[in-house]
Length: 218
Image 1 (cartoon, rainbow, N blue to C red):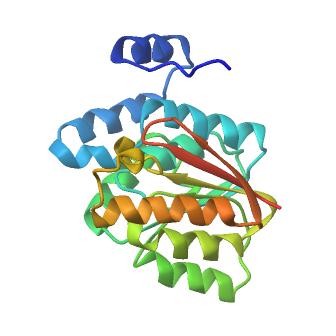
Image 2: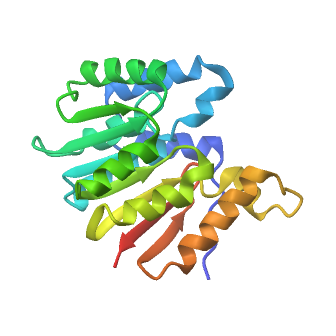
């Protein structure tokens, strides 16, 4: 059996140079996030930007729900791949970072596709459920304590063969470190097992960034 490569910084740079170029505003967001210190860890990686862009296009996604926006890198990666009549609803409870994200969306001329909602995501999800709102894809990258809740409700908000993509499922590699038993690491471990045992989807974990789980609704 072939072995996965360990991606060091030199190989990562090589991959980025030979992949399609990010939009200038995506680079702006990355530069801005790098100025924020440790909190920059909340942004997705460049490889994840590429993946979200490509899967949105090849899956012919038109309507997207994002749970967790931060400064808008993942949002913009998806929106740029949507058709002109596509739409994305982005949920986040942080008004300050949301305003920064909105400015980036305007710079990239994508604000028409993107609607942001600032309040606890579970409230919005329950509103969508009551109104029978349906999406083609849901991207989850928010508070880990509610991952199971976000996943369960999202299953009722996507059509058959719709996608749920979840970030941070490898949790800096700590999910396999037996010496790590803090609350958040165990939450991610439990979530990963929960999704694996769910018969309503088929799923795969991809070692991109901090780990993506990609689920297809059966």
